[in-house]
Length: 111
Image (cartoon, rainbow, N blue to C red; front, side, top):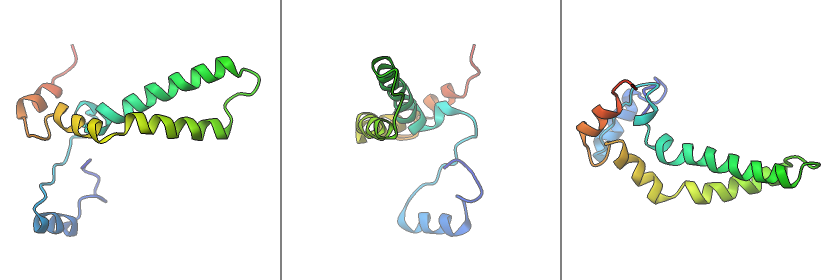
């Protein structure tokens, strides 16, 4: 969870405990610990931009139509938002299976 007060209510905590979920609040502004940012959203943006750039080169006089944008988003989501990428995000960030060494290394200042 990102720690926003609308997400972490006492009701949510009780329900999570009741079903055996562990809630983890991730520090703000540390993208390296956000599993979907690492393996889904960043690749989505990169892939979408590549598709858009090719389209714009080939279709200079038409620009990016609404149809193209929706088609592109649909294709790119199928490529980047996969169960494998989601799982990889949690593993890469050290959240699941819990690896505090990986998490700590992600929080080191960039050099």
